[in-house]
Every structure is written in C-alpha cells, then in structure tokens.
Length: 107
Image 1 (tube, rainbow, N blue to C red):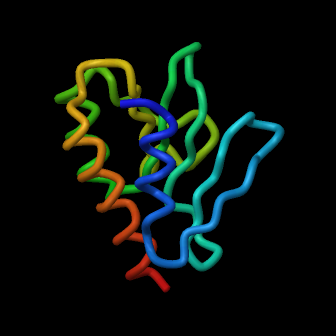
Image 2 (cartoon, rainbow, N blue to C red):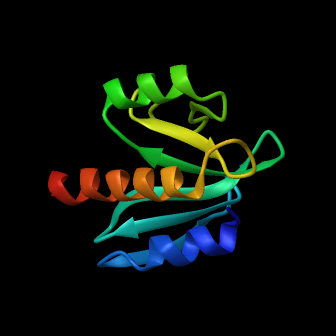
C-alpha cells in the first residue's frame, strides 16, 4: 500500500475533505469536518492513523505488530497502521471503512 492509493481511497468517501496538519506533518482526511484518517510517517515509515472502538483497537494491536497506538491522538480510539508492513491492502481498506463509519454514525 502506498500513500497515494490510500489518499485516493479515503477521498472517495462521501463528504471527504483533505487538509494538512503542519505541526504533525500529516494529511488529515475529514468527512463533514470530523477526522477519520490521518496519513503521515511514524517511526520513519509510511502510516495511517484510524479510529475504532477501544475493544477493536486493543485486539488489532495484540494481533498485528504493524498496528500501534497513535502518537498524537486518543490512544484508546486511534491506532497507527504501518503501510509498508505485513498488513494486507484489504485489511487497511476495511479499517478505513470502519473508521469512516465510526465518525459518520457519531454525527
């Protein structure tokens, strides 16, 4: 997975808007003003931070070494996924969808 493919997928979501968070050197993707994905580098690797339930975040981190708590966001809800690791593209797309759904239903 690369950043370009991931950004294209995120921007295909309804109401998706892209902005840059210069302090974190990250591209934020929001839907109707609510953050659901942040594409950035973590530990020198391409990564995306996504929102989930705390239970799912904990499970994902236990099962995958390429998923860690997010550095800049609420660690109980936000996880960082390394794009250059062992995660399959389909897993990353599924978690993007789940993050989008989480913020879409919270409105």
